[in-house]
Amino acid sequence: MIETPTRRAVLGAGVFAAGSLIRIDSSVAQASLPPTPACHDGDEATLRQTEGPFFKPSSPERAELLEAGMPGQPIELVGFVISRTCKPLAGALLDFWQADDKGRYDNSGFRLRGHQFSDAEGRYRLRSVVPGVYVGRTRHIHVKVQPRGGRVLTTQLYFPGEAQNRADGLFRSELLMRTAKNAGWLAGRFDFVLD
Image 1 (cartoon, rainbow, N blue to C red):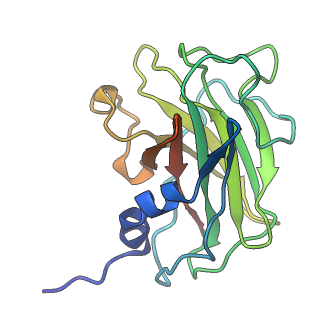
Image 2 (image 1 turned 90 degrees about the vertical axis):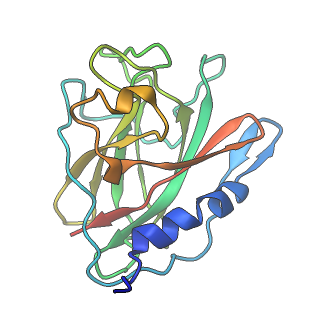
């Protein structure tokens, strides 16, 4: 029996192509994504997960969480926000928060926290650092995604190849980012599929 590949499988096969689209120029990563990737109507929506204890509302609007002198491996995460019918969702709110490279959250300010909106083609781009691990958790980035007038998706994104993935009770392979090294940066890709 031959199975039709899902949108996620097709996108996963192209991770290194997506990583090659990220150009590093004067220590600045700029993302350029191709038009909305092919997908199949009815693909499963992105898995929901707990927001955890560290969410703070009213984060600043910004796609650059990386600050001058901030330690850690820089990462640029790119992708699309699309519907289950493959329609790009323009103006979707994406609110990201994460730990620093030592596994600590800023609970008094908004360091490594920020929100943005997807562009007219449903694209987003986040620049940050790879978060550290802390007791009981593997590396992860939290996100809330909400289409205009729609329901909020709260979830977490995970890094492939992490030793702590197996020990983390919240880890789900469906939420793995695709990653590749690119001129000192980590290039990441994840597409959100919303109901």
